[in-house]
Figure 1 (cartoon, rainbow, N blue to C red):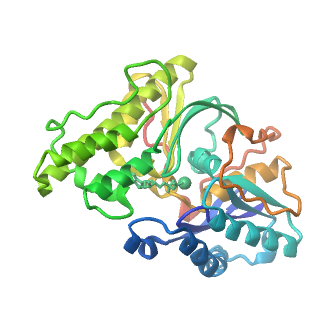
Figure 2: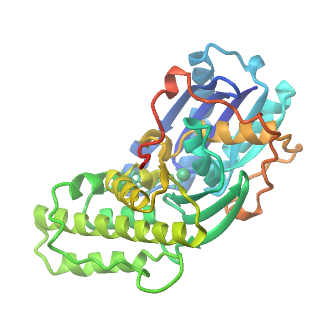
Length: 363
Ligand code: KG4
Ligand code: ZN
């Protein structure tokens, strides 16, 4: 089954073709970073308009990369939420129109399920039960996955998402937008001993997170220095270490509480090498396996949407003629993915998707 995946939930236009047996055949990403940079953040209306401009050419190029025509497609998957409603509508209406004109099924994909399943792109043998830490610009979720498509929320951020905190702290440090990768770069020059950032909500039971206090701590710490490049690097390092530690502590707690021995972590913030290392330490210490998508599949992309959509189409799920777009959408409300055994797609092989998503496999 050839599935076209479309991602337009935020500031990235992503398109991919996934084949149920041959894996990922092609994927392309167009980033709107340059468009939003002068404003210091994402301007939703500009994002929607840019998706309108870029999506169709990107679909043509992605199909051409795989040497396919539109008529080869067996299904279309698009991100239906959560995200910016105008941006989502571009992908949703394009997906439905394409499927309708080609007389093939179309399926609405939850963006965070796309992230959650991304490690399976390269390790299809990864089976539930597993825990999933999803860390992006809009979400911080700790999920128990007993069966594909059945998600139980164990913990979430009660205020800012991790990515949001990275972006806001980066702004305080004059690193511009997007802040996460720039902050990670600066933190490499920083002294980890200089500032003692708190590990929020780790001293009490539970699996929820809070990151807004780290922002305030950053603001006060910065104000108490003279703001030299070294001061900023030390602050970046203190902040990043605190985030990485906090995430790792909560993952360890969740592994122990559930007795689950596999941890998946995904979402844009998981591109951060310090966080990846910290999660590897913790899962190693707990004798758990850690599955991380490579950084390219941590941040938004069309491949994860094509893959999640392919699973749901194989399970017989599809939309009617109504276009689905939801700014908010609870992951726990999704129907299970009822795959008949043996139908799980086998990924790998494709040149554009070589490499190993599994960065750590402690013995
Ligand atoms: O998953 P994603 O691409 O989009 C959303 O679904 O939100 O995540 C974007 C977030 C942004 O907040 C960005 O700053 C953060 O991921 N991010 C990072 C890194 N790369 C992206 N945060 C920390 N370190 C990074 N290397
Ligand atoms: Zn995302």
